[in-house]
Length: 412
Ligand code: ADP
Ligand code: ASP
Ligand code: MG
Image 1: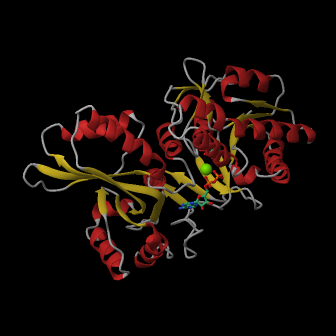
Image 2: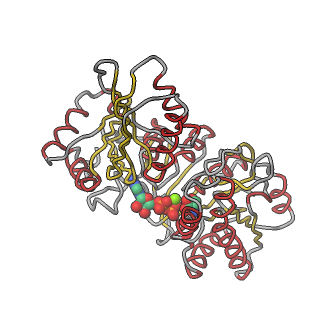
């Protein structure tokens, strides 16, 4: 029988009633003749709560134990979903990551999927089971310990299962009815897109649009998974939601197709670093080893052999970054006068494939922000995106002003 993957995010399984609603959606697909693999997230708020427990217990936590704790939310919803389906007389069984087994690297808290053997679940389908409910976000490292795939990782579990099982489609059910030109929660003029190109979705996701985890889009692109984002709260037709697809399948092409933001950014500056060959490696090597995800980097012009080095990272990694830098200084590997953290910044980005062939997008973006009196602290660009770091208090204003200026409420 053809296989369908259906993923339900945190809000879609937040209560027993919502699990029931989601299970009914699954029942509809089973009745159409699909064998269904359901991927569930933890109940909304649950993973945040668990992460909070870990941080409070151990601020510079051991990532193995972080994974042991934060992976547990999904175990609850997987079992409850299987029970709900059984109550509806749909033959269903739950699977935790290690039972599949979903094999990952040992990069705890940010593991990558290595392999999903299909035998166990396929055998159950052959025996008459109609729904395999799999706990999202979690897997097992080569040494047998539980891993997690990074925040939002259930999306990646879903796409990886769709690829491994050759599913007809991977439907991501969430609390919005598709991918929008920007987050509809902060910009009421945001417009739902019927289709979005993999590459644009990849940029939007990696720049902060939570609606899909970046890695899930990468996998869908690589394995040609038919990926759809839709609402679990509305009755759905077969063409509902947003299809993430190849660029060639899209007729409307705006120069800018979306605005993304990332709220919890920090800007860190090492003041008066000795400017010598190898200094960047001496700074960013230890940061990477400490698990700090450095994003933007700026090195000032040096004066008398000394310079300031600025980089951005997520706010919850500031303490790790400070420790890595003070340790490197104590070990004599680097030398700086001071380290300053600005934890009140956010990143706002505009994305669009059309930028490849249109000049002037950056200039327009800077003008819009300047007209709003918003100061830009750091800029980075690539072929299809421009990102700026600004004070967090202006983030929503910046998103709305850019959405207006690039007329994203109108289709091309
Ligand atoms: P889930 O729990 O279902 O995985 P998430 O909270 O991870 O849901 O992702 C959905 C959220 O992503 C939406 O509620 C919305 O606020 C946010 N979001 C950010 N950018 C976008 C966008 N461009 N289009 C749609 N949703 C977006
Ligand atoms: N529950 C995990 C998180 O909140 C994984 C997910 O929902 O995708 O990050
Ligand atoms: Mg999510």
